[in-house]
Length: 366
Image 1 (cartoon, rainbow, N blue to C red):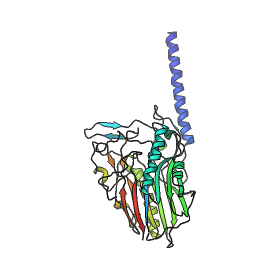
Image 2 (image 1 turned 45 degrees about the horizontal axis):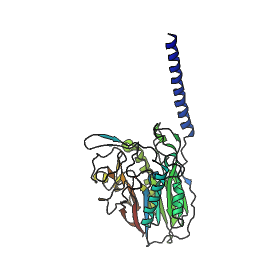
Image 3 (image 1 turned 90 degrees about the vertical axis):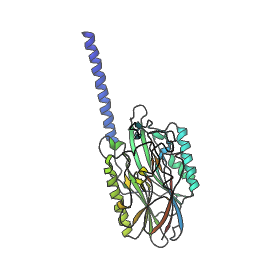
Image 4 (image 1 turned 120 degrees about the vertical axis):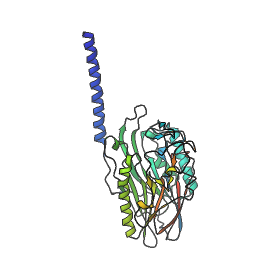
């Protein structure tokens, strides 16, 4: 009996230790968690002097570089899917497979961007100092690759050490939105999106935001250039609707002022009816919401890529990428005001360096 009693005592102590460790970790997460204030001015580095000209053709690209993790065979633990026969699937990784892989993907994304020869680049999931990307400074690498461009950066994900999943913890994350441009920027501001503040979702849903740049135009107007990254894992799309309401309100204000407006980025909504457009062995994932002009304020439209039917911009990460089998959709792109004449192309980078393909906008301020 004494031995049995001793065994139960040891088990009890171990259980208590586990409870204290878990409770302590939750306290750590809560005390280190905070949201960045709304409407925070952002510094513009390396600002050129040249102003934009109406009637001149420019190019802008949007590209979610996926923190340098997403080689074609990479899968992500938060991505789930359902095959057409009903079989569920789920990704496995939380961090990139190696530092070398992150560096290769970052350099690959840079080579893709250089090939686009864009005047402006709106980039998402750019890591600065994160466990998941082996502390590779992607922002510095991108700025070094485009030394004559202005640079603005807004934090979109900052967290204490995320110990989940247990076998491959996501770790500490510092990531954001980066805009590189070849024209003068008068000012830049970080605007906070609403997010799901429920526990534990808030620790994984990033500190969502959009980055607003104001660029002078020689005719006295402004180009309001916005880099946006909406929530992805939002069951029912309630948070994304709140986010859409906020940014549409900004669009309305800018249109009333007579400004030119371009909003680009990762909308995490299916654009152009693309939710069922591409051949796939999978059902439409539950995270996919649809988006069209009916959701926008008057005077705005989605610029649908000319080649949208042949080139998607995003793959689901529940299984390795295989063209015609993995679920794909177009969620990246641009919305413009009616005084901006624009066309777009989805760029087929083969999901070689990210789970997204870039989109190239050719535009003219009228």
